[in-house]
Length: 468
Image 1: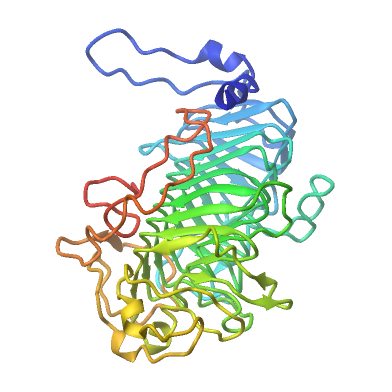
Image 2: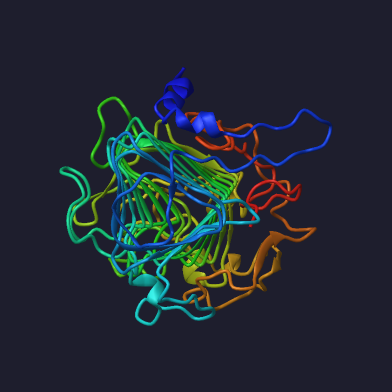
């Protein structure tokens, strides 16, 4: 029923123009959908728009574009949006970006170019924000983004797009603010952001199989879920995040809806090193805090500043408070470090605040056995003997690698697992259940919840998981 109501909210013209497959034994590709009238690429876009951006066209955006409540914009495969500095997409209606594996969509600041190798907050333009972001209002019931490159976003908002929403100065690439709406972000890429790349204030979310590079300048997370956000963050590759790749928190709570995020089968590499706040007040891969529930399983964590954290503090300055430890669960996570400082935080310690992460026998290394039954939450320990152990054996990223603070992009590396990797076959497929709360539809929903994989991290030996 929920899916039916959702689809009925999209203009009926969509279904009138959706193509059908021919009845034959051969496979016939389905044409891209079109909503309403085509949007012309002949003149720069500015102000209210609706309709369809046609496949393989290049559009220039000269000022904020606005999708009014009740209106829909569909972007077909292969489109490039060249965004002027600071321009935003304000979504009061429905936004659908439907790239394909062979013809992705690109939304970018055309004046900037991606760089490889060493990356620092002071030298890399990826952290400064070129265009603004995609800001989804409480009236946005559906935002779907598939096979889309979001590059160089996060310029600070100059005016508030609606009362009670984001603030002037916010620097998010994506913002979603409807606790009853659906946000689907799958098989896409994010490159660069000054702060949190994606900030949720409620909603049903599916965040799957994305590749994320250089997220956060001197702070900020990749995907940061606030009050009333429920869903999955799975099979994502994060490299060089300023703080965490994934985080759940219940800030700005929504009555009757506690934030609950299943964070599973993600790969986190070199995260947590650009946060200039107090050491230990934030994590470096996956974090559960502020009365939220987290399910943290099957993740591969390599050279990150902290292991996954279940917050137990009451630090007013850091604004990090107790997680919901009753409903949260975790295990079967893999950690590797090329530094004693990092190995000393496989199980995060009480550096700046209390931490309640309980060592697990199912983790690699077995931190429960390593620390012993007398270990208390957050106590300092000596992890020097763990340095360099359990090399995950990436196909093309040699470990040890001591550039973990500044190697923040995928470049030409390949983070699939080689045959013989100790991370193969070590995941759980039964210890938890992913959240199933978004519509499943080729165009107006998720492609489906990819279940937990038996191999740790975002790449599976059988070809499932992250497709990049």
